[in-house]
Length: 329
Image (cartoon, rainbow, N blue to C red; front, side, top):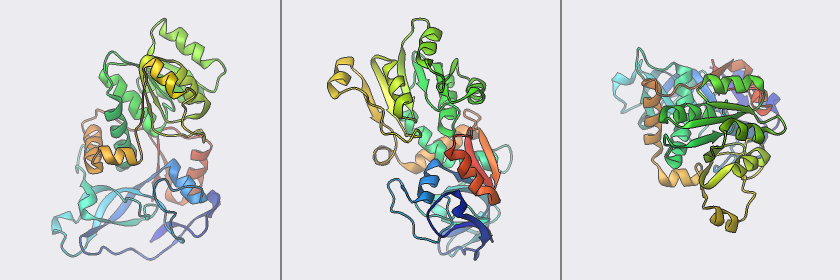
């Protein structure tokens, strides 16, 4: 099969499009003919050798990628025959193998997709990983119609889903995005107020647009100075839910614990080991897939050919993408 193989850590150029042996479905497994493979920002740090999240660094050579959608074309011993030909989506877990024409996964971890009137393969692969993380964030946030909710990176894969969820809940949604094109995307997704946080003085634009209303909830996946400025907009008694640091900086808490107590803030880290303790991941995946199947949430996707995985990584690292990045073999 054709796949992206990585033999060394480094820049995007280490991702090579090549021929590798076809994987075979073992006992209790299915093999998926991949139609869409998800790409994460964490994939870029794994590739570079600078971080693999909570997992050990991968052994090389490897085929990267942890999310796939497609059709089952082979079943292993003990798997019912009805799985053959079934549209499916799966998170591959810490294992690699997604950036390829074929991928193998335990059948217990695979979700069936509707044959008709369901999400596209690209939409399904966006929801199995990015979507399940979004569900965990939403559980932590508890959005209500009375909230004034501020979302950073609102044109990204998670941010775009959070904007839609806030709109669905009836909250006032303030979207922060980098550059005019992404601001326009945030407005299309349903934000009531959309501001370019690459512009100096953007917090004053938010205050002016809110006309005296205060931010009650901040959902931040950027951290660094944008996250710190967003936190300063948060009203007394407000909630801060953090889920990432795409700026490359640490957690955006520019106040002391005493300050947080004095302001009555609630601060939650929504992903990582904490999310694993609070939630069953398969249940979050099912929630996410139900949301897209019913049309309640619709992920925005930006697709690249599988052969152009290096370009997809470059675009992610330079913040040149909007929505979920997906590779298509």
